[in-house]
Amino acid sequence: MGLSWQQGPLAVGAVGRFLVPDPLPGRLLYAEPLRRRMRVRFGGEWIADSDDVVLLHEPGRYPVAYFPPGAIADGVLLSGEHTTRHRDLGLTTWYTVRAGTGDKQRAAYQHVELPDHAGELKARVAFAWRAMDAFYEEDERIVGHAADSYHRIDIRRTSRHLTVHHAGQVVADTSRPLALYESGFAPRWYVPREDTDESALTPVEGQTFCPYKGLCSYYDIGSARRAAWSYENAWTEVRRVSGLISFEPDKAEVHIDGTRLRPEPGQSVVAHGIDRDLTPDELAPGKDT
Image 1 (cartoon, helix red, strand yellow):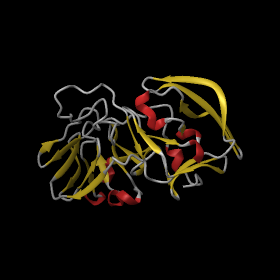
Image 2 (image 1 turned 45 degrees about the horizontal axis):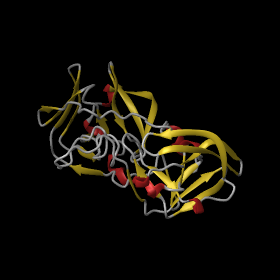
Image 3 (image 1 turned 90 degrees about the vertical axis):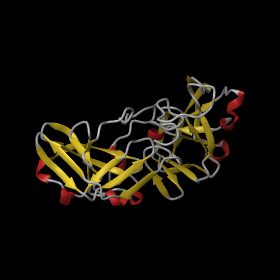
C-alpha cells in the first residue's frame, strides 16, 4: 500500500524495480512535507495543530507524521527515561503525553541523534497513533494511520465474465463486476449481490477495517473460512463497491474470462509496527468520527 508498504516502490517486497545500473540500498527512508493541516486530539483536548508536518515513509510501515515542536501545546510532553534505538535514525527518546483527562506513557517520541542526512526530522515529534484519541486532517478524522498520499484506489466498470465456484457449486456468475485497483495490491473483483448465490454465504463474526475503504465483513463458503468479504457501507471515496462481494482466489475458484485467478506473492495484509494494532473499535459509534 502506498510508497513503502506492501509492494510499493520503497517496500522490501517491491513488485517493480528502479531501472538503475547499481543496486539500491536494502532500505530507503523517504521524508516529505505532508502539505495538509494535521491535528491531534488527546484527553479531550487539541494537543497538536500544524500545516508543517513531515511524513516519514519507512519500509514495512505505514507513514508516520512528525510535528514541529512549536505546533505542540505547552506542557503536553513530559520527559521519560525510556529510550530505544531506531535502526536508521539512531537514539529515540519517548515521552509521556498529558493533557485534559489523559495521561499516557510512551505516547510520543523524538529521534535525538539523527544522522546528518535525516535533518528533515530534527527536533520533530511523532505521536503513537493508538495512544492518541484521534488524528484529523482539517476537520475530518483520519482512522488507522497517517494517510499515504501515494496510496490510490481506482474502480472500473467492466463486462468481463467472472465466475466463482466452491465444491462444485456456482457461488457467483456475472458479466458486470467492478475491478478495484489499489496501490500495492493485485486487482480485486467485486460482484453485485444479485449475481451471487447468497445462500452459499454464511456471515461470520469478526470484522476488520481498511483506512481507505472502511469496515469489512466476512463470509464463509461451506468449509472455506472467510472466503468472501464485503464493505457494506464503504467510505465515500469508494462508495461504488458498497454491499458488493469479493472473493479470495486461494479459498474459492475465481475465474475471469475462463482464466483462474491465483493469489499473488506479497498480498497478505499484516498489522505491522508499534502503533499498527488496528481494530474495528476505532470505527465504533461514539469514537468521535
